[in-house]
Amino acid sequence: MSMKIAVRMDDITPDMDWENFNFFLDLFEKAGISPLLGIVPDNRDKNLRRRSVNEDFYELMKSLEKKGFCLAMHGCYHVYTTESGGLFPLNNFSEFAGLPYEEQKELLLHGKEQLKEKGIETDIFMAPAHSYDENTLKALIELGFTKMTDGFGSKPYTYNGMTFYPISFRLGSSLKKKSGATTMVIHANTVTEADKAWYKRIFEEYGKNMISYSDYLKIEPVKRGSIGRLGESLLARVKRFLVSLRNR
Image (tube, rainbow, N blue to C red; front, side):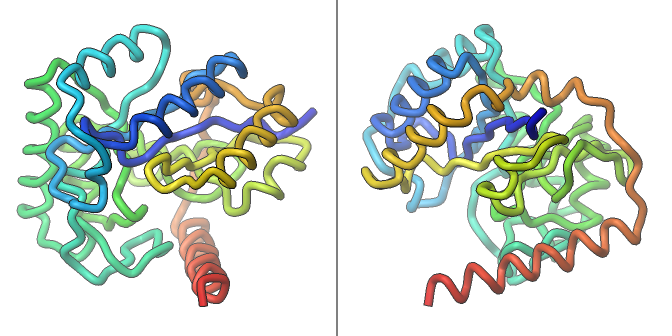
């Protein structure tokens, strides 16, 4: 037995780095899995604009969905407007956390409508910078979202009416665990050739442990209360600190 690893890809836009995206599509196909793709509905983040716009972007997304890929709404504009880490403070900036409820709901509704106009509907949310607060959750639920790809843990859990599908605290450790399930997070836009070689080795060595995100969604969630959420928040702060040390 081994921990099952699902995959999510962040920052999916019409002008992303398509060479890197296709590199991962090849890895997914060889591993026989389908990931979760986080689509930015109305991208205004210049850092995500890597290539010329693919005019067939939304048709491609819908065709991938038909093949078994899962789609999530990844924020709205992907522009950070606050210095809040929210309930899961892996970072100290956010597109949503810290904003008033009505303002957050307006942003989320705009993102949802943008995707719907393109023929994409989803009840999965992916917060930019992993940052959200109680107002984000309240607005998401009111708009029909039921799932979030975030948190730490070895299985999905429910909290305040939302089901969370955790990400890996440390991938190297997750790959060696004997039970449970978690998520590998991939930012294809920023991977280097050295990173690609590392991912290729990981998929070759641990591909048998990987599952499609659709299978991850089928795992029965457990309940998590305020104490569990507090522990998760502390772990997020620890990881943020460790990453800051590594980047110095």
